[in-house]
Length: 202
Ligand SMILES: [Zn+2]
Ligand SMILES: [Zn+2]
Image (cartoon, rainbow, N blue to C red; front, side):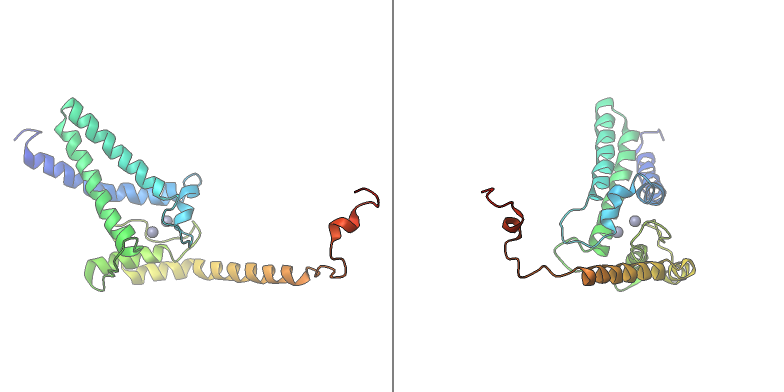
């Protein structure tokens, strides 16, 4: 068996696929939720009606890396590089189906899993989104989904959900108080711009 035989190439693709879970977990935890990656990822933790998010640029970057590896592997005749690129691409497809499809329902049909591994994947990522901010989130991976009970306990222990709810309530109350103190415009001055103009200026 040589390094370019099919069993080896399939093995490399599978190991890459599994290793990508660690890459995705690390990138999600330390880059996307980190100081300089949050700028793109924040859009994914906020509610909106747009079709695309700034966060989708991460998918563009990862696809770009896989494309470059495919091109290099083909041009230089390196089957191992092609197997590596295949593993990355397979993970990307899995990620898209689970994350964008099953969890966030970004496809035109409704399909919410109610059983087994798929249900656990969806639950774990929904609990990641239980926190709107970038700190104290749980479940950064995708292929491996911790049990929902454990994630609930983690969220409870940090108290982050309660903290965010309290902050939102306070912000709402402050906004209400600010609008209540604004004095209504003086109705007797119908054309304030004209009234302020010096006489004879027109
Ligand atoms: Zn996140
Ligand atoms: Zn998500």
